[in-house]
Image (tube, rainbow, N blue to C red; front, side):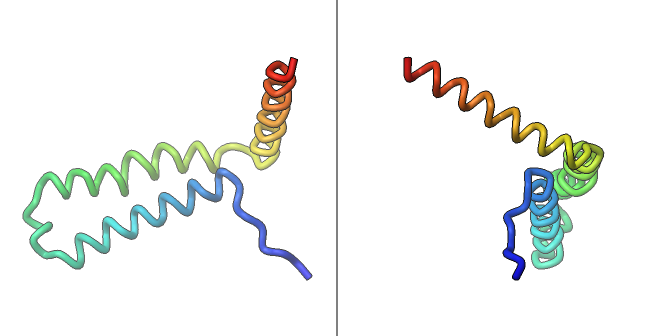
Length: 88
């Protein structure tokens, strides 16, 4: 039987971006007063359109799966090295 595994960093980025985008769009739909608020509309545009979708998501999904696994292995090596240095 297959176990459910936690997502890797790219998966969490996708989940977070999706959740934040849905929350902001839901707020805009649920609260009609926000339709008049230019500040909120600017923030919503930045979150949904520019900052996350074009920036973080493109970076996360342009990377190879092997690259993410290699980064995790490198982080483990660095952590082990740091622990050895503090034990001496």
